Length: 237
Ligand code: URA
Image (cartoon, rainbow, N blue to C red; front, side, top):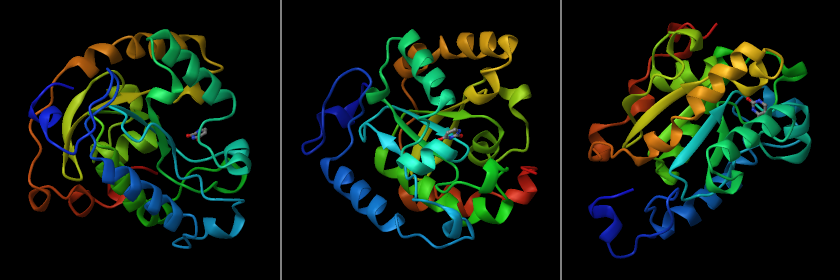
């Protein structure tokens, strides 16, 4: 990322895929993850093995947001460690990135029973965890994987088939980011045509990372969580 933030004292200056996140945000992110580990905001707390907060580079310029932990994620406490995760890693490698370059999180931090779809009240209960993550990581590109993340973060009910590959500038928390909707890797696993589209959308990621985004707004002017319509109005279900 270019720009004046790179020069600010106390900010981390790092390699290509890394943003200038203040060192103290990393500690805050760690502390936030620790407090979220005991979250009981919704019914999913009862059936989970553990909270799957998110993982990866806390300075990442590129952040992925999936849907919810599945069986393996719930057991290991890490996002995207199953088959969909393997594909995500392969796609990343294809554009010259490693998993360790990016940050990966989900809309829901706990596994829904039987991997059913997230419910509106679960998304509502959980979304502030995601918005806080985004605020602390300060990515420049947020790639949403599938319908749930795309609808939540775009604040629009348009499905992934309509909007995949179409980046849009938006404000998340106090941050201007490029939102980049992509097909969910789990959907592409068994549908070769969808995999082709996902690969070609992925191929644009380096270009998007190279783009500068509009300056940050003052935090009090840009609080998206309170501005976003409730999950049900977004047509998530
Ligand atoms: N699918 C998701 O959306 N998230 C995961 O962490 C794993 C599979």
